[in-house]
Amino acid sequence: MSAEGRRRALRLLGALAVTGAAAPATWLGGRAAAQGYAGLGADAEGYSQVVEGRRFAFPRDRGPHPDFRIEWWYLTANLSDAAGRAFGVQWTLFRQAVSPDPGLDGWASPQIWMGHAALTSADRHLTAEKFGRGGVGQAGAVAQPYRAWIDDWRMESLGEGFSPLRLRAGGRGFSYDLGLRAEGPEVLQGRAGYSVKSERGQASYYYSAPFLRASGELRLGGERVEVSGPAWLDREWSSQPLEADQPGWDWFSVHLEGGDKLMLYRMRRVGARPYLSAAWIRPDGAIERLDPAEVALAPAAEAEVAGRMIPLEWTVEIPSRGLALIVEPLNRAAWMDMSFPYWEGPIRVEGSRAGVGYMELTGY
Image (cartoon, rainbow, N blue to C red):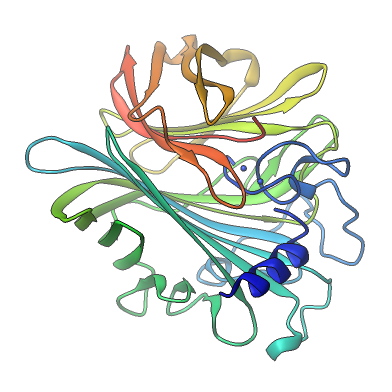
């Protein structure tokens, strides 16, 4: 995209900064804007609203929901090579509507798309970003056969079903080409897919595919590396999920030894306690929403990254599960220094259970 085209995209996006995720002061991550975190507190009149009790249906809900204002496809993978070296891969596709009329097509389409890709090792963190228009084939998503793309970055099914998948993306100095296979079901987060973001009822629709197994090739500089490991796909959409006094969030997905999964996030509030949400996912795919009163999530140590202090070490305690974890990043410098900055990278988990996962810190 040309410099002028990029400026137009940025104006249309309203200045995106990140879930869990990512963008400048008005879309997904970065510092709070006057109209709310990443602009998500802005007026959502005319867009479809999130209401409890919606029935999810697949494959339909793997595709886009253009009548809602914002949406994302968010894939992370914790990988290792034959020598045991650890790597992390992130691929995120964001959709934002700039008007509430989903019926427009072609160049009149109100859908703007943004893609983020990253490859992280213990000593390197490489990133890339793309912008695209909906309605003209440059970016989009299809429910069946499953496909989500922006330019030549693609996550797509290799058959008529959801799995197996192929994921391809890259940027300067890196690329990845991974196969993904589902080894368990998709699960509905929150209350049957209704995910609350504040005490005042802001919410999104949210489900995950946390049982993906990835394998394939990374290119890091001139090195090509065969890797494999667990992966996690999150899908979320809404029209106004945050309050104006919520400057950002701290989000974690964890693959624990033994096959259990843990998802938790806290939505920070100015002058008040964060809003906490957590879910325990058993190896068979059964998911249990945890009472926030039984979960203690707290920063343990900060570090300076990109000129700002960020909590990069955390503790997680869930006494009812006998869980006491210490969370540390693989690479402290995993700053997504793009148009919309945030911290995003793979984590190591130690304590009462070992594991790996991903951490996303926005609004710092």
